[in-house]
Image (cartoon, rainbow over all chains, first blue to last red):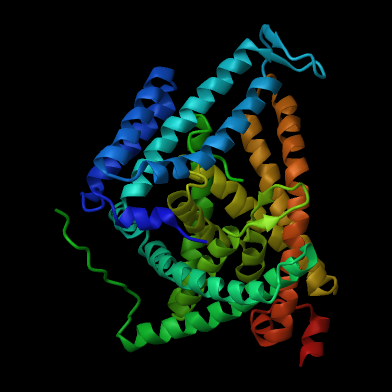
Length: 229
Length: 225
């Protein structure tokens, strides 16, 4: 399990750019695309964001396609579903199977939804592929999101990566002992894996608290925010 | 499956945000109170939130052949209660959107409502109800995880049917429920079973933790001593 997005977010040409600017580009465009619901606009947004991600931020096309492929499949399947099973307008195409037909308003709905999802997803992609999470959390802090929420999120973010390391180690150990050879043993192994991980996480939280306390933690986590170019 | 970025029309995005925010605010107030009383609990919350995230990014083999992932909210709700879980869920969902491109920012409100509020609340109520009637906690946790998962998807179907009432709300609700029933009931059972295995291993290895959190049924407390 690896988070390509996190690695890319820290290593691209735009990761040093001002967070505010990136958010000011991505979020309003996303909202406009969502509210306007216009096919041409959706298409333009998609192209602009693709250019922003691949050419301006210099993220390889391979990574971008990998990022966009899973949402693409989901959106495609959902919209096919919308096209074939919805609507009450004029029948424009008959499949001849179980009386399933395509109606003109359903086709409209499906196509519009698909394009809207894509436009919004490109904006999200632009934001997440160029902005590290810690920068986003700093931004949320400025928006008067309660401090405790940000703190827990930051602690969570660091812990996730510790967990993933431990998970990999334990999973490898199980796999080398044929722990995932059948469905039954898979469940058994997964149970062991996660109960162990939970126990370790409790121990980890104790260690984390101790290390915070020993460094003078008084309920606040001041974090250095490096100045951007 | 979370609702994708941009899938809901703007009006519905806004509505679900408005409905979710009070619960999350209540959860934050509750967390604030707890962390002021017991400062150690902040680290515990963060670590368990990370645990929820890792659990939900796990691929689970389900009967239909498709790979789905557990939500982990039933487990969280049983251990920490529904209000706290809703706060953890909003962070988990934000991370999923940002780190895994799963879900989205505009649909965050709707997803929090289904996965962070309805699911955990049902799971917690089911668990408390079953444990009160002195049935083994392993059985209770199965039903908690099962119903928590199921109700999450029922809520998602409601949200989708409200957003796409085409031709009627009932008609489209049945369609969405039908689609989810095929894929999600096996998944809910799988998550229930997995949670039981985790729970049993936890009960064997560290019964003291569960006792301290006051989660076992009264019969089991005596047995584990």
